[in-house]
Length: 434
Image: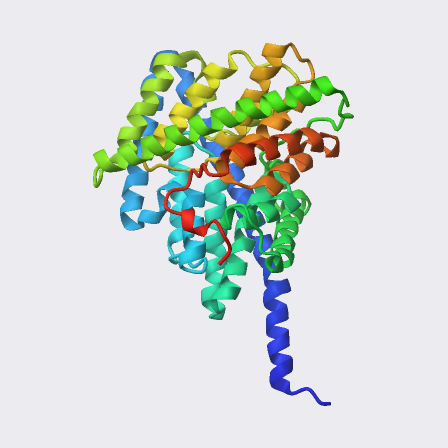
């Protein structure tokens, strides 16, 4: 039986969409992740260096940069409203309502808004904005090739997973995360292969290829966790299992408070300052929190969180005053992102889990902090983002396979207790696959 040319062309087209395009998108998103992960922390570092030259001018300089970043972000958001606030919220909404399609100006404007928000001192994470930028990049391909909605959705997932993998260096976890977060706790497995291909492609780009590029020495650390906890054997004892359960319960409680506080601030700011300079008001509140309560530790509550998260998540030492640090960083993040600044909640969520694990370790006198930190991170990710499988996989890819038990305990407890708490507004109807 002969096969028609039309059949062959259709097969090749589907094959390229499902396999070749995800690889290409992954490479591009890997480059984007390198750029985002390099330029924004570098800019914030320069701001802090400039502020530190003259101690008497530190606060005025930082305040001016905060206001400038917030005002520019507000101006950009007037051109495209979707670039403000939480990146993943827009990503999920676009995935379901517009098959992942974004306006042509979304990706560059989202980057600029994130750069001016976080690079000039606002508080927030990079993962959410990067995921949105990756989806915007995939949207270009979908428009260019005039793909149907089912294919453009797959490419949107590839863009999300590619940028997350490039930032975190967790290729398998990034793929599962993209699928789970867009379906709010479920997975459509027929999309898994192209999404995983994109995620692996981005990982290869950031972990290997970037090293041979010009100026590759400046791009050696494009991921969130630059040091990894040593994969030591998990101490199999009932005591440690009980400690993990306590840490998971405590983290879940903190996560519920975290979600309620953020949604309250976001809704209140939108209602009170609708049509006004919301990000600027948020920047003023961020400055007040930082200057009044953390004057000697401004770097811990301002800017993007990667170095702070890394220190809390990978250090074997107990961090001083973890609850005070958590309250301060959460407040500055809420006032930045909740008031319309461009930032993400992934890193703040990881920080909640890390500091809650450290707090329990301190209260119980436990020296092996990594076990409870792993439990806390997994529980926090599940509680805030409803990604039970991705949380375990990401924790294992970061900390090592020996930490799968504490990660699984945190994931299970948080999913059972907090699965109905969603931090992204107006997307309850997207919980189940269409």
